[in-house]
Image (tube, rainbow, N blue to C red; front, side, top):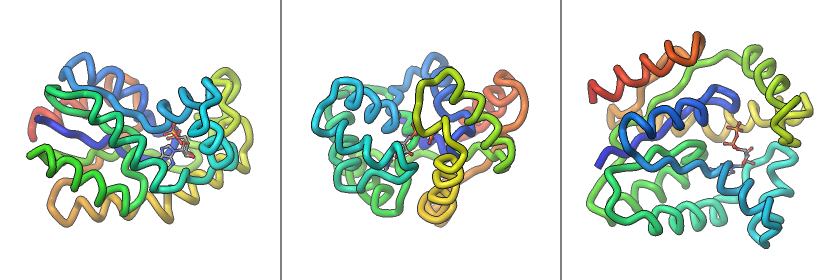
Length: 190
Ligand code: ADP
């Protein structure tokens, strides 16, 4: 199996690139943000719980997120691999993912981080907020909070996988096709 973690700050283009990578590499794309939004759209208890955190730019608690992720992975037997997008976002989530993959006799192949600076991210998210209907994109304060949470809680996940030589950075600025080309090169060289 190939199991990729697509990493980077909010608005770095993970979702967009994951959709393109899925077509090319026949992997299953799992976005925890999309899963939460699906639950919210259906007003499920999980969705209602997640909404309280998401609208403020905070992380949903690990226990909730890890449980949801495991259910999703379990519902996809016999696949060639996964692209995890927006997960893991904390060290406990990374540990849980390692355990889960280990129980399936596989592991994380690589973590690829899309490198984009803060000003660009804020501009992209405010622009996306005009059409995405996402509350967390519409308010600059919430966007700043998400970046702060990324720096304090999520960026250590990069260092965590760097310890086993699995982390890499690619430039996340440029055309969609340029970035896709850089990602494909990185994956082909694994
Ligand atoms: P973005 O990367 O643009 O912030 P996502 O769709 O990945 O968008 O995430 C949106 C929100 O969903 C996050 O701000 C957070 O509240 C929640 N969320 C998504 N994934 C996780 C996760 N792995 N752990 C905790 N909360 C999460």
